[in-house]
Image 1 (tube, one colour):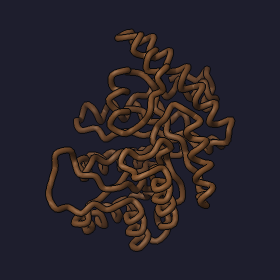
Image 2 (image 1 turned 135 degrees about the horizontal axis):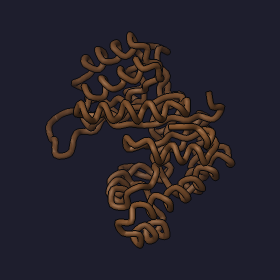
Image 3 (image 1 turned 180 degrees about the horizontal axis):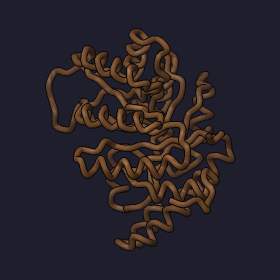
Length: 283
């Protein structure tokens, strides 16, 4: 097992073909012996069954699977059922997130914030699960202020979370400053940098606009210059993200959490460069 934390994130497949492909991706990334694989949970629980099914499949395959969870106030009973199912399956960790409604969905649903969800799980399950939460080095897009965002992060840890995973970013100084500010308010829990490989310019712009992640102007300009030259984008992305990861690890980051976009090859290449896997290993 690696001494530095390593984990990978998937979004749940919705078709038999997608599931078969992702099982292959999981198998390839398993060679890196990560601490866990996490599986996202769509807004308002829109992928609940898909998430559960793939979490259980990963766990049954011998890996540590970590489901993402979010919930609305009127869904607590179904959440308890799901948590009991996860506990019975041997799941040891949960990523507890704020509840979001799917785009365009209105109605009276009362959203539960992440610190409340952490408290809810602790109330009903004690220490059965390790709880991880989201952190935002470049500020959550809906935060009142930088200070308020860190205030609410601290509330998540006070409620019983043990580690954080960040939104992705490409400026290592934003992470260093964020950790410094967290420590000033007494947050000592490990906060793992989230890493987004660069493989598609248009998708990256779209994701970043929606989640508030900043792409430095010089990176954006270079990617735009490459147009549809996929190989050049991939090579440039590997160099940029490798440098970012090396900077983070050399300056004390506890490890890395890769947003794989359900692909194996780029994450494998990055991890080889970073020494998580012998470069001569076969895949």
